[in-house]
Length: 308
Ligand code: NCD
Image 1 (cartoon, rainbow, N blue to C red):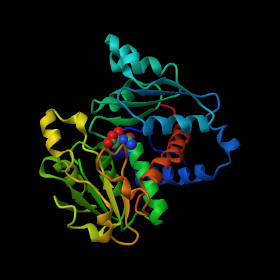
Image 2: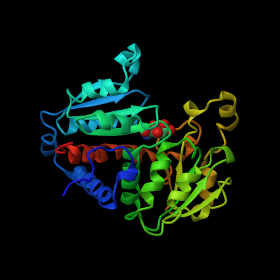
Image 3: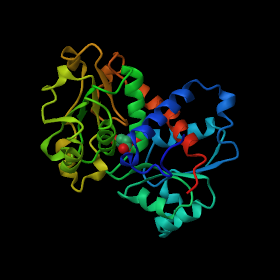
Image 4: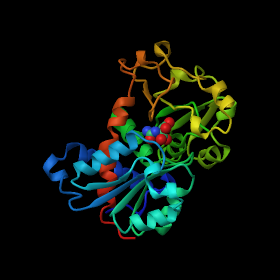
């Protein structure tokens, strides 16, 4: 049985079965011999269109494609594409879908991936659309939690930082709602709170608490998921400057936390996590980034045969 989806646009389109299928396939990818893996995307061309900057998402997707024996075409800077000549997104996508077997894209406009999926004859994978969604990041976040804690049910997770503009935490909230007894602590200053709509959509399934104080729930947490303040989404630079260092995690937080407490972060970090935490057992963020490869291998292999 495959995915019930033809495109990966929003985590909200996933059933629990779809999510679990990706996680299981990722874990198989982790142990599949290299030669076997290298036949999965043989003779396939995958387009990687990054209209917005990226390091991990693009490189882990491109690594996954190479590991699966596929080939990559695309760009990492829209300035070198016809976008700079005024070509519309729809035209670019329609055309690339005639070249490639799947399209991975990142764009600053919310809803861009959904629009692309409407005009593309081939599966679209959303690598982030503005402040909206980042579904493949969420799948690797869930994979990381499951690998570390052997379960997702019952997890107590703090989401810290820019919960207003951070697309990774938006997607994560919806995904966690599929699991039992999950408690989510939204920790943000007033101006960067989790959007009301997302809280409302998930409050039936999740136990959600909101606070401005990092220390309030720290001893209860299994995971603290820190995020970068999303500078590029602020209309006012002064407002960003005022809030950019609102939470900085250092070694001292570990005095208050559980033994199995872990810190996650989608990366890149700016000032949110001091380097002194990197060598502690709590630091899970580099492992998390590494998990991007098997999870994206799983996504690509599951979408391979999909007809739109
Ligand atoms: C995140 C993103 O692009 O939303 N990065 C990533 O994909 N790992 C987080 C961020 O940029 O802050």
